[in-house]
Amino acid sequence: MNPATIGKRIDRLFSLKGFFSGKPSQPSPYAERFDLTDHGIVLPDLADFPECREIKQVPSLPQEDALTAPLAAALNNCDVKAFESSLVALQSALIGLDAFNANEMTILQAQIKNIRGMGVSYIKHKAQRQATTRDDLPTTPAYQSLVADGVYASQVNTSEIQAHLQASIDELIAQQPPELCDPSQGYDRSRMIFPEEDAVLFEELHKAFRPGGLLPAATKYHRVPDLDFKHACLHICAPTDTHYTQTLQDCQTTSRLVGLHYDPKPVMKIILYLNDVTPDAGPFSFLPTSHRWRFSELEMVIAKGNSTGNYLNTPEHRRVALSFPQILRKNAILGRMVPDGSALSEKLLQAEKHYTSDFANCMLFDAGHGFHRGGICKSGLRVNLQIALK
Image 1: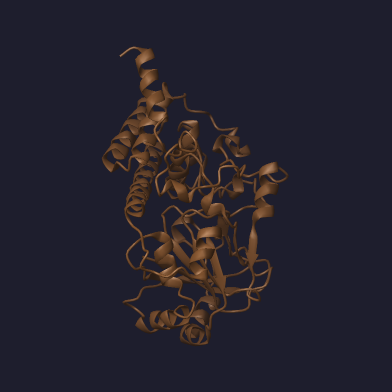
Image 2: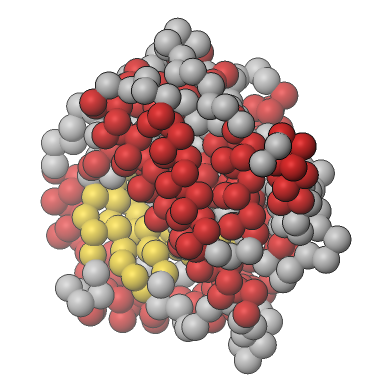
């Protein structure tokens, strides 16, 4: 096939309706949720991070567009098999550069595997949402807030929940946290709780959330069968915490936006405070309407896989990530990559809204698309449940 023919095929792939070429002429119901195109936010390129400039670069891939265009088309068409085969082609091309040592090869394989998992999760949810409506559920203030802002904040009664968990809370507070929180550890001090382990807790959560209609609102917004609790993470935030530094952990460069991210999976979550949370106690923050910001679908989804497939916490990890084509070098844990004083930093900081307990103690939000962070504690403690819905 001659270069001109290849170019025409690539142009045809890029012109398919979807995110990659901008606003489609006939957007699908899924595309319509990303209706804000003038937000001015650009996902940072890892190559611009200061500690990446000193790393010996891997040779550039030849014909990068021929590798990225099939990935974009597979996401647009909700084609899992095409997405997986396109990732195999990308991995083969990167291996073909013959530029990685044995450890870097292991890192590459893990990153590609995670991109695959997050991409498949995204495609399945996208296809389901395009095929599903929940008009049987009422249009409530909680639902309307999710549609407009991506978050619904309210006050709920937590007295019974707090009393039920007090022994676990005391135990976690008494724990000696690690000096440095490894990515495999999650949070510095936390306990995962599943419904089959503690039926009383989840019954109390149902009672607390029922008056505000939180679960039906999340179900209607997410366009899925009825949502329920997947698990709850009891998390103690303290000034000694380092969980939010896991990405690029060995680097000196940081940012006022450290910890800002969107989740790798298309998941709905609830943050529930179990104590008074002040501005210095690491309150949850969200950027209202960020769940509607339209990016290239390809860079948005690959960034999800990169965010947990490669924490960029050694020079070898960064070298592997830097070998990807430019559009695949983005990361959903983006905050630390935004330079202080930049126009992007100022725009994001101005958009960020902090939720202290005097305003709300319960935040239902679109974690898989909305930009958020929390748990960066300067003083005191933040005791909270982070609840994932399934």
